[in-house]
Length: 122
Image (spheres, rainbow, N blue to C red):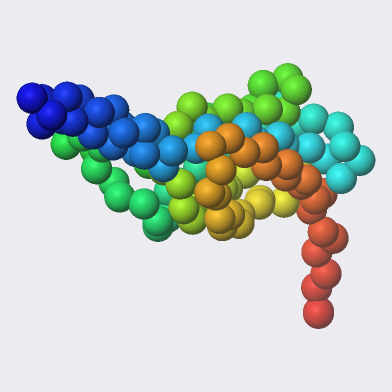
């Protein structure tokens, strides 16, 4: 009788543990002055960390989306670990960095630089 009760408890516990291995990301893209940048292209990719397998199914590890008018892009779920965030916006330098994410929810603020002047040696 104990094993019958123990099995559902273990299943619920393992699901709770696995749910803790996922992160919801909120990415804010702004100018150096703090103004939001809308329609910036954001690519978020899981690089390394936790397992790719969730109850026998492969989970999504890459998202490609654009920021809204507030400069925000929301990622519903991505595995915790090392995550690469790349941002491309017209009129700004391309941004790329790897972040260590171990929280259930995380907000990442990214400030883009304007392009630098190009100089010629000739």
